[in-house]
Image (cartoon, rainbow, N blue to C red; front, side):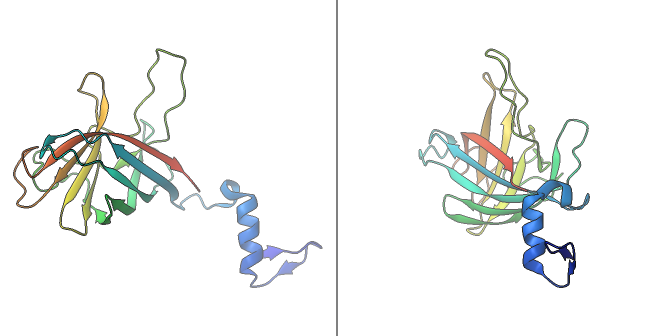
Length: 185
């Protein structure tokens, strides 16, 4: 339902309702409606494992729950996108491992972009050390996560390739990446 200039109700006007939502995007949304995000990560081309030096380019969209947990993370409900031109077919469930990466499990959590802080102060990462796991149309899997155990901390993309040997051994790879995600609605 929407209202015309005179305040009269306009029945069945999806265009008027869409215009209203675009003018007041957050205040009009239902409390249980998922957040829409865009995301991307880029790799430097250096890796352990296959060592093929392939640059990594991944991007897409995901939906999350609206209410963050106590650490500010939102649960990713659905993902779309691509990694190096291969379509992402879906999330690997939280609490499980992608093939070749046992015993490491993903949690599929993300939080708002880190705030810009004064020089020398670190902000919190957008991903956890468990990270986001997804399957690709070519039969491979990726787990992008925050490697807070490294010095300096960085993002990593563990890419698992058939026949799925354990760890970052060929043909699998683990490469440093810069991950960024932002809310679009």
